[in-house]
Structure formats: C-alpha cells, structure tokens
Image (tube, rainbow, N blue to C red; front, side, top):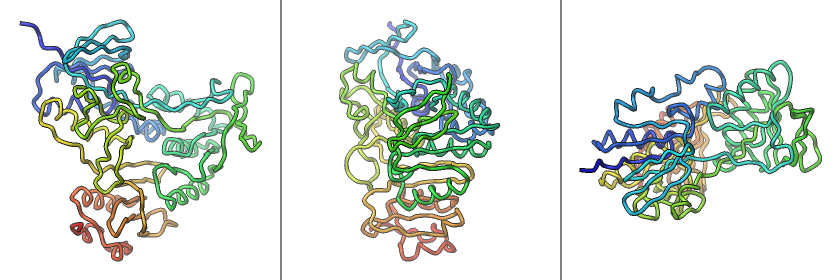
Length: 419
C-alpha cells in the first residue's frame, strides 16, 4: 500500500502556520510539509516594526512555536529552502525547492505572502537604503538606527503604517527623521482624512519632519553610503540612511506557474479556493471577495494578521471538506510610539463621522457611518471602544450616532441590533 502524499503548505508565515494548526485542530491526520523561505521558525511579523525594532522584544518572544512543536504535531518544517517550482497533475503534484529537493504532495496550499514594493530610483541600491520585511531586515535596520542615534538622519520614503512605525521607533532612539510621502495625506489608503490629520500633527509634535505631496526622484551617494534624497520639486533632504516603505505586492509567481487566475493577488472564492478548484490560497497573497457585509462589493487584498489567521482557518475547513465560508469583520492595529491605533471594519463610502473624545488628548474614537449604519471605528488609545465595536460588528449590531459622541457612556451599552 502506498503512503499518502502529504499536504504541502508553501509559506511559513502567519497564514501558513495558522493553516497547519487549524488542520490539526479539525482532526486532520494526513502528513503535512510546511516550507518557509527564512531560516527561523514561523514568527509574528508585526512586532518587527514595533517591539522587536524598539528592543523590547527578542526573537524568542515573537516565534510562535519552537521547532520541536512541529515534530509533535507530525508537521515537517522546512526552513531556509523556498519552493522554486511546482508542477501539478490533478490531485497530485511535486514541488522543487531552491536546493533541488523534490517534495511530492496531494493537497496544496499557497501562503506565499507579500514582497516589499521596490523603488526604481537612481541610488536605490546603495548599502544604506533599507526596507523591512524579515527578521534579518529588522536586525540590520536596528543596527543602523543605533548608529544614527549619535548623529545622522533617517529618511523614510512612504507614509504608511510601516514607515510611520519605524519613524516613531527612530525618534524614540534620538534619531532625526524625515518622512517623504507622495500623496496628499498620511495613511491615505487605509484611514479616514480626520485620522490622517491627527497622525500628521502627532508625528510633527514629536519632532519628525513630514513632507507631503513630495516624490523622491534620486538617492544621492556620499562615498559608499547615502548623503541625501532628491525630490521632484528640486528640494534636497540630507540623509544618512533611507528606509523604503512604499507598500507591498502579493507574491503570485508560483500561482502563475500553475496557471491560476491572478489579479493583484491569487484570485480565490469565499472558501479560499483558487481558480483550479483544488488549490487553496490564503493571507495577503490573495484577492478575496470582500468578506465584510457592510463593506463595498468587489474584491480586495487584505494585509493583516487577523486576515491571515481567519482566512487560513477557512482554507483548512475547505481542505477537510467542511466548507465554511470566509465572513470575518476586518480589523487592524498600529503602534506608533505610545500611540496605539485599532481599527474595526472598513472605511469606505462613509457619509457621517462621529468624534468621540478629544483628539488633542490623543485618546479618541472616530465612528464612521453609512446611511445611519455603523461601518467602521478608528480608535486611538481607546481599547474598550475598539473591543465594543469589533464585537458589535461581528454580531451584526450598530450604535446610534446621536448617542455615541459622549465618551462617558461605554459603547457596549449603546449596541443595538442593526435594522
């Protein structure tokens, strides 16, 4: 009797780990091979731009499980040897890793994640031009920031979450920081205009120079390192190091090898099934039908640990045949220094915003409505508001906007069933 072919999970990030964990939780006993590109076991990636970079967390604090745990779960963990090629013929296939190892499989899951978007600028290949995606990147960036603390300037190209989190960490270490953002506001793709204005003022209060509507066109060398960043309007910003943080793109190369449909990400249905009807794909490498019933119709690519975890559990249920659909309420968080932001729902097509608390105190909540229905909340330092809204949205509830502005009334008391 031939041995069963294992389930191959390509990608050992949050989504890949959650998928293999969920398979075991669901009672699946088939052998599993989990293949990761990095030489360390799966770890929590968000702290790389927060506690790990700040030095308050070590690698052992962010690794989900030590390697013996995987053996106990009958999961073969392959580290530092990424899958380079996949071939599939019906319900079986084989993958070849970078080292030439061939892994036969029965079921296939792609959890290939994202890659940082690159800037095609003169000077972008200089040694002191950095990005942040892996533990190795964070170690290198941390060493550079420690060196700049005695003198020097970090220029951050990109005013998104990663750029602003690193900017806050750098300022806390005494580093001079300039953030260069091409758009007209910070975090413009993911938060409301009101919250963008708050974070602009908050970072400037803390000594960070923020340049909006500013496009970097060249990184100028100073010897072998970086000396400045030139902008499209002719300005020159002094720089000792540059962090490029201009977003990420889905890693779809293996999906394209397999002939799967790709549109900004691996196209999957509500059960995490790719276009061949056999392969599952999970996490931020995917383009998913909007799972949020109060969102706008269409597809989107979500980048968050919550999405990775929830989507992976959906994919695991698909692989074992239970067929649960992905319907999670999205939520996100960002620590920028001592400012903690928590977001529930999706900000889109909003027609009313209720401000709860005073932004000047750096503790407030923005409640966003469409046609009288609560669709999202942005909470800065108001954890209880976030918990109430998140749980309420998950249960299909709403909050009367006229009653919500008083911060003295807990939001959990105001939750009512949505019409």
